[in-house]
Image (cartoon, rainbow, N blue to C red; front, side, top):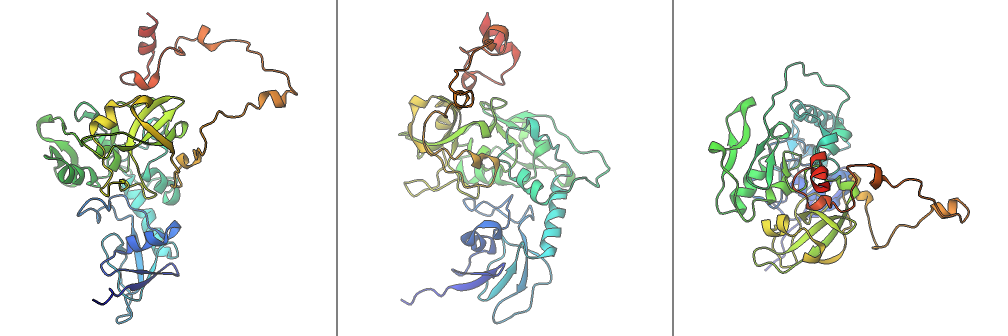
Length: 369
C-alpha cells in the first residue's frame, strides 16, 4: 500500500505538511505560536463544533497549486480544509486583524465585562482575545440584554449574560452524557442556554461543561469567589476511579485543594489520558475529592498558555526563600500585630476550600460562635 500523500500549506510564510482533510486551524496548531488563530467555539474533542464564533477567520491568498486564485472572502479556519499548495494569512493580514477586532466587539456587545468578580478571570479565552484585539470603547448605544443567574443542579451555576453561545456545553452534554437536559432556546437576540421548566443537570459527567466553557458562563459552585487562579498552584494528580480516567489537575494553595479540573493542553482543551481516551473526569473526582490525601500528586503542571496563570511554573515543591532577614542585614523581622487577634474575617481554623459557598462575613461569624 502506497503512503498517503501529504499536502503542503503555508501559513504566515511558514510551510507545514499535513494529511488531506486537515483544517487550516489544525494545520496552524502544528506550527504553534501566534500563527494559530484563536478559537472560541471549536473544540477538537467534540464532533460538529466550530463555525459559530468567527474568531478564527483567516485570509486564503492562494487556493492551491492547481487553482491559485485567492478566496474572495475571509474563511473560518476551523471549518475550511487545506489544499496542496494553499497559502494562508493570519496575523500578517490587515483584513484578518480588522475583522477579528470586529468579531471581538460583537462578542462584547452584551458581555457585562465583570472580570474583577468573575471566577473565569485569568483563564478566560474571551479576556485574552479582548486584550489582543479589543477596542477601548464600544459603539453600542442600546441597552444590553441581561439574565438572572440560574442554578443548573447542585454544582453548576449559569451566568447567561456572559455566554457567547459557542454551543460547547450543549455538544458536551449531548456526546458525553446519557441524556441532555439543556440546550439553546429561542432565536435571535433572545437565544439562551437553558433547560425546560428549570430541570437540574444530574449526570456523572455533567461537570465537564464547566471545563469546555471558554468564558465564565458556567461556573463551579464549589469554587465560586474562594480564590483567584493565579494565586493557586496547578498540580497534576491521579487516583483509581471506576467511572473515569482519574487523571486531573488540582488547583492548590498551600495544602488546600480549592478545585479539581480535567487536564488541559496549550489550546485550553482537555488532554488525552494515559489510557488513550479523552481525559474527561466524573463528578466524584471533580466535586467530592477536595483533600490532598485523596490524590496521588505527580508534580506541578507546566502551564503552556500565555495567560496570567502561566506565571505559576512551579518546578519544585519548596518554601519561598525568606528575604526580609537578608535585606535587614541579619536582623529577624518583628511581629508588631497579629491580624488574627484584631480581625473577624481572618481566622486560622477556617479552611476556605471546605466552606459551602463564598467566603462572607456570615461564615466567619458562624465559625467564631
